[in-house]
Length: 236
Figure (tube, rainbow, N blue to C red):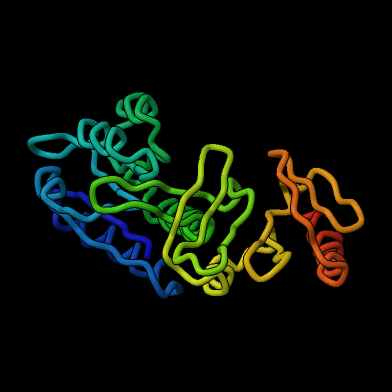
């Protein structure tokens, strides 16, 4: 799910913005957009938004201040500013806004930018898993996983990275289907290795960059080598 929030106090401009976004998201199955009249109303929302489209000149807390708060709480949120005044461009740059769009150019620029950002977010969401609970969450990108393992008679599947090991109660076969990433190649019934971290391959042993090694059957080693030959160039 990609969530878009629009904060605009002018009702006509809010409707226009929503109309533009609605046309863009027609081609997507899992993108939602919600409107807010003020920064204060938006802050009462408990939902995390992936993309926030902000009017700078808001009553009460202005868009620049709200953008700073959003950025402090979530550096993954994309902020797009809408305004009628060019003098705000520098301030929006200082808080690392994704784009600064003059309202006079909104009809032309906003659809292109929103579509690009949605595509980026969809791709990003397909490339990581979230671990933790409502109090603390960790985003684990697939590119950072060295290997995945599920040992016999254990309930948890483990994700081994350079920074530590993460666990999730999920069958090994199911996690491979959900990840569906060609970087990972199964070497037996309980292990899948990220080919980006392979340092060396001997006749029946795969050595990883973290100095771990796995013994692999001759049949499976043949499959591993074919997989690497097919996909290695995608990540070189």
